[in-house]
Amino acid sequence: MKRYLLLGMGLFLALGMSGKAYSQGAIISAAGPVHRGMGGASTAAPISALGALYWNPATISGLEHSELEVGVDLLFTDHNVSSSVGPFGGSTDADPGTFPVPNFGWVHHLEDSPFTLGLGVNSVAGFKTSLPSDSTNPVLMPQPSGLGRISSEATFLQIAPVLSVILTDRLSVAAGPVITTAQVGLEPFVFDSANSNNTYSAGRATKYHWGGGFQAGMYYILNDAWHVGASYKSKAWMETFEFMGVDENGVARTLTTEIDLPTTVSLGLGFTGFDKWLFAADARFIDYENADGFGDRASYDATGKLNGLDWSSVFALALGAQRSINDRIYLRMGYTYNQNPIQNNESFFNLASPLIYEHMLSAGGSFKLNDKVSLNAGYSHYFENAVTGPIIQPGTGALAGSSVTNTMSADFLSFGILMRQ
Image 1: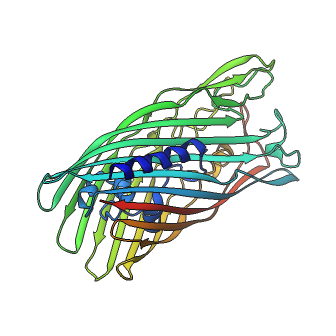
Image 2: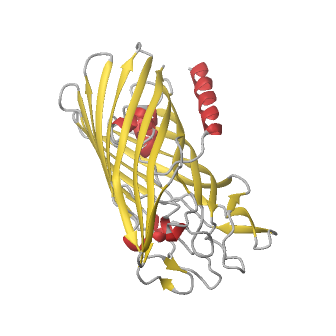
Image 3: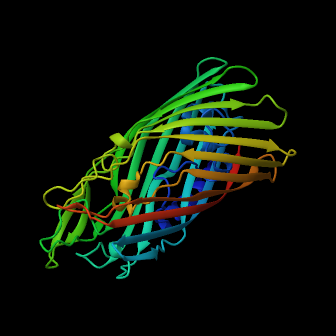
């Protein structure tokens, strides 16, 4: 198991160094191919290390074996921005590229003990897009007439050691700290004051920024068929983000903003009453409204600084099913619904963070090479969604006769390996 652990950590670190960010979420709904195939439902249905650790740490006590799981998601996005002012309008496609989202999960049952140790290292949130300056598209016209080129990338990685304990034959509880690190870049950087010529500098983070929080969970076996679970993940309180920028004369200036990840509360139900089947359902509340940066009001101050994105808190529903075909092959399907945190009148403020998906359909499967090793694959499609609102200018507000539309869809392809002790 030690050499598996070292191998998994090595693979994860290599992928983490090469990866950038991803443009859907902002909270990623699933971790790894097994969890993705279930649509992200796992709060009361532990079937793999990554899925058990991701939404409810107490479920690691319900895994049959000590496990190491490494997974990689590849994200493909289709983002388009169209805008108009009176009779003039245009449409521009983004080119964010394809990028990996790595995940690592380790679970170890202590021998002859009620305690189980776990460690999750996951890319949990982020966004990315790249829109060229476009003189035919009013919102993307060169500054100061428009915003010019829009480029964004954000990656939030969480390191979460947990301890789970079996209190009774039916009840397990768990808790642990959550360490978060993030890298963010944004052009134009609208979250600090404008330059004196009414243009905005690009902003590139000066370093990885760190923050912390905690999580706790409960897993209860009602009977042989029904399981329930609940978990609480606190806000990730991040240090102030600092960025390197320049003023209108090219002189260096420091830009700052506050960004926290939101509190998440999950409730889950699992059912194993039918032979060879597992069904899971999760309900989740994500409190964007009270997370710095995301929930702050989308308004400009006197210096031209945008105060926040004005996201709403949302509910999400995840449904998943697994069927064992034989001793080696497992098939999965899942569906996820997320309320859109971005309202139509906030479309302009979220050109760099167009995280507007609502419906996701997933499928996946596993093949056991032997009793110790399984190969896993999963796929998710985020159906196209769009939001439309006016162009908003500092000092003047909504521009009469204007419109800007964000349209987005995405696909995740996941693969990985799971090793049991």
